[in-house]
Amino acid sequence: MKKLSVSIALVLLMCTAFVSANELKPKKTYSNVSSELATLLAPDGAVGDLENETVVKVKIRINADNEIVVLQTNTTNAELSNYIKVSLNYKKLSSFELGLDKEYVFDVNFQM
Image 1 (cartoon, one colour):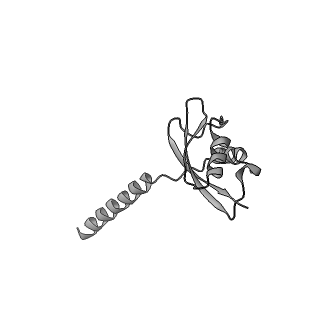
Image 2 (spheres, one colour):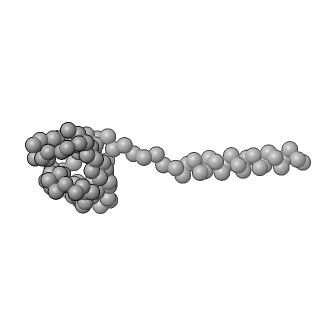
Image 3 (cartoon, helix red, strand yellow):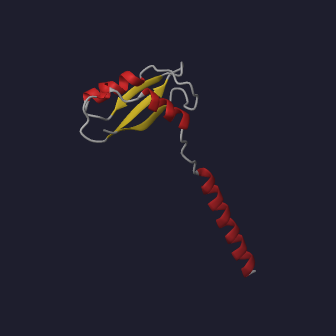
């Protein structure tokens, strides 16, 4: 009887572990979108002088025409923020990895 109780408890514990493991969803990488964004944000002289490496969080949304709409950047550098907005706003994505009317946040790493 004791072995039966231990076996039932072990089975319940294992089932709980499997259920909780199924609930965790791995993060998507969006590799096609990442390469498209890197191409659109190709560096040029418009960024201005950056004194050191800068990482900017950019919040975007994809509209019904599969175009990027920049909602927000977290940089205090006005030239850099303007460069990101001009480079990305209303540019059409060729990949359809991102869902429509959902907000996405990604990091843009600008290096000297």
